[in-house]
Length: 364
Ligand SMILES: Nc1ncnc2c1ncn2[C@@H]1O[C@H](COP(=O)(O)OP(=O)(O)OP(=O)(O)O)[C@@H](O)[C@H]1O
Ligand SMILES: [Mg+2]
Image (cartoon, rainbow, N blue to C red; front, side, top):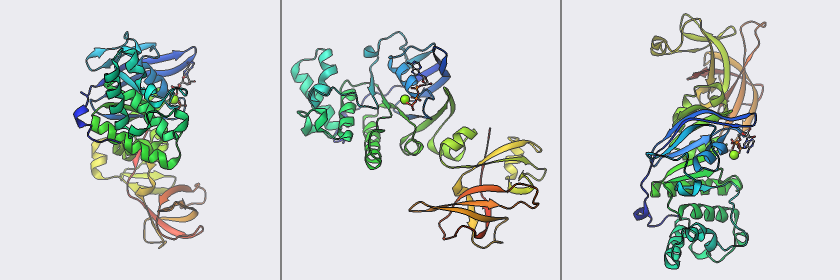
């Protein structure tokens, strides 16, 4: 999808959103969003349906006016600039191609509005179709293309205007799983080679973790956490982030004097002394811990590891397995605790196992 394009690299710009608020009638769609997207960064907005992702993109593009706040692209404040003068490319979820027009005309549309001459238009369209690997298809109409090819036309149509920022709103959601994975890799490598600042929207956490430089996890119109994929996955700050991005077991407990996490009548995990010294959590504090399945060791030897448990459920995932383990409390009066662990062995439901928690994150 990307041959010999480095000479066409764009000058990357940053995008700064300050205090963005959007109210529709009585719905607060965005509530004080502050983000700084760095030049040339692949930045993803990740969050559930209705959390405000599309609204935020539309505000940056200029299709929607914020109720409060400002948008800066590079060092230019764009709030009062109409969409077509913002130099921002937009790729929509449903492609939004004109069905009766050829691929060529779809891509050329914006150039014609800019009144470029025919030679220039042909050159630019050829360049953009070359970028997305559709050079031979300019005479077809969208109905003669696959979903993935139609989405590439939409990308070419955005890029042909040489935008300084590319916005993509769930561009892959109409594609089947395999094509989605292929196409997202292509979008990422195209973005890298062009060096263009890209803001990408998805509700697919795996997609976000794979392709992003940084991710903003959104919930109910607010940004819950901004970070690299590793930071978001390994160190979620909130319960929402932990549970939305990947699987997690969530445990309520208290920090004991010995620096352990106690849940019910069990000591689940001992914090490193450096963590206790850091003052991030205090003795006696009630906390919520999020534990990733990969951070839980499971042994088929029922006494090898500190916690005793019983396998409740085994889920086969192809390359690995996931087991749900019920951790037995010391006294029958305390309800048992359920943990989700990654495990590649062959335990069966009902098996007595032992378990150790290797790491966890405290969340709010
Ligand atoms: N034009 C509008 N008029 C009224 N309410 C709107 C309008 N556009 C969006 N909303 C509301 O604002 C909130 C955010 O919507 P938005 O489309 O930004 O969510 P989203 O994160 O893109 O969701 P999805 O993943 O389903 O696309 C929702 O509650 C939605 O109903
Ligand atoms: Mg949306």
